[in-house]
Image (tube, rainbow, N blue to C red; front, side):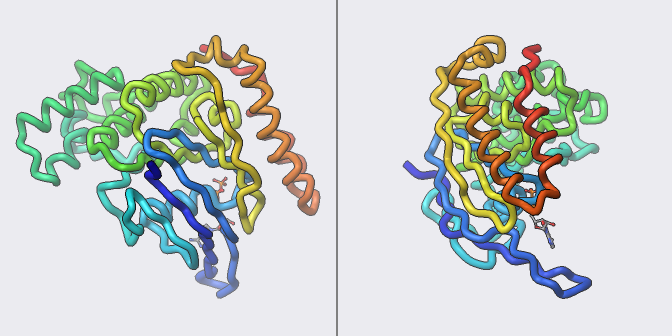
Amino acid sequence: MTALKIDRLRKVYTDTYSGEEVTAIDDVSFSVRKGEFVSVLGPSGCGKTTVLNIVAGFVRQSGGTVVVDGRPVDGPGPDRGVVFQSHALFPWKTVLGNVVFGLRMRKVPRAERNARGEEFLKLVGLEGFAHRYPHELSGGMQQRLGVARVLANEPAVMLMDEPFASIDAQTRRRLQEDLTGIFETRRPTVFFVTHDVDEAVFLSDRIVVLSRRPSRVREIVDVALPRPRRWQEAAELPEFRRIANRVNELLGDDEGAGAGAGAGDGGARGGEAGGEPDAA
Ligand SMILES: Nc1ncnc2c1ncn2[C@@H]1O[C@H](COP(=O)(O)OP(=O)(O)OP(=O)(O)O)[C@@H](O)[C@H]1O
């Protein structure tokens, strides 16, 4: 069953000052099945966040359609939960208060929402922190709280925009394992934007590789690695490296096809993403 269908999506931005038009997304189509983890990767500035923002309903497309659970997207809604790079938590609410916020808005009775909130805090390893405040948590814990908050609402699609980008490498590996564990337990539908090739391979069932701006889908790469996944074992599988190499190749080709300006950038990204995964 299809949870998210993106069809011939196009986005042209108009620069507020110069009035110039920039085609960010030219023609992007792909679907995400219910319970599937799909990552979107592409060169810097190719429009990954734009696709996610259109799906979230924050940005309006210039053409094409987005359908979530059979309904066309026409603005933000509780059927799509977004985990941002920065935590976007309510600093004045407790950890539990943050997790149950959406349930409260939906008038779920207090006892039930608190029980659900506690359950999701446990799932992300934050049991015992329910009555703390976000500022008392580390960056990694805040990001877990962001995940718990979205999961508690049980959205049709969970949208994650580089959620671990600002977290140190060691913690990031742990959070990726935690997210994989949560995914394998609850099977939410996930649309995940990242720059990091290894991260995409480790987490995903499929990877949508976008071209440079104005972006199109270059290739959709299947990740048929066994689950449950742990870094230590997954990174040693020849299939892991084969997929990462293929994605790097697609990204590299694309940088090479540019005016040359992106070549250094592409090389650096390939190096960063394609290096030995530092299994923590
Ligand atoms: N509000 C806006 N107004 C004008 N141009 C925009 C706007 N938002 C994004 N753009 C442009 O659209 C293109 C795609 O941006 P977007 O942030 O979606 O790319 P991205 O792939 O997520 O980038 P990155 O990899 O750097 O995170 C970029 O060229 C960007 O400058």
